[in-house]
Amino acid sequence: MSVHIRIRYALCTQPIELPVFNPVALDLLQMLAEPYTDIFDVVRTINEDQALAAQVLRMANSPSYMGRNKCETIKSAAIRLGARQITNLAMAASHASLHASENPVVNDIMQDLWLHSHACALGCKSVALNTGQQNLADQAYLAGLLHDIGKLYLLKALERIIHNRELEIVLEKELLRNIFAEMHVEFGCRLMDHWNLPGIYRAIVAHHHDKTFNPDDILLAIVRMVNFNSRNFHLNSYPTQNEAQETVPDASPLYVDEAAWTKMESVMTGSLSIVH
Image (cartoon, helix red, strand yellow):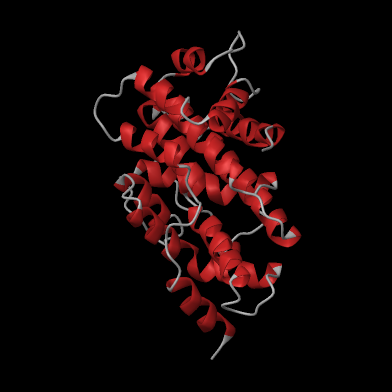
């Protein structure tokens, strides 16, 4: 039996309840699925997790998000940013805190994955804001943040498998690159289904590498373009094998002029100033 088949079998027998989402962040995401969200409910929920609240506040005061005045509380940050954006920051803060490992090889990859996901989140929001899709800006941010969630899940699951001695393998970068290429979409979708996350984000996870896609799906077009071009900004150290050979994804549903491109590049490269 090949190594990849043994790895797939071991992964498929793992419980899906691995630490890939903070429960508070998941509650917030479910709130956003409701047509009306009370901003004070959002603030109260974030404050239930002191560590998460501290990270959200730190990110809200970082150069990528900060307004004229520094926010001293989650409430003031939420009032300035709005319920959707403060929830997005909570998801990002939760996401960042999970990209760490005692294994040096895995930790390096997790760090790179976080930088890539966060840069794509900011880049997707920038594209939406500057291509006439302002109504999609907050959704674009979260779609960019979550599109590669399957890679984080695979790393967490493989660490558990090795720790439990269910499989004797060494997690080397080339092996992990191949596993990502073969499995990250599949397992990302399993994770989204398990947590019953909104369908628009599940669709991003499922189709961001497809050769063709529905041209009316503007959100997917944004994520595909930003994800592909993240390598130009040295923010995609682990592209999938077929991604490395792809031509530029069709961005015909969008009109990204030079000014919009420059703004996207600026926010993506500027995201490197926010480390977790």
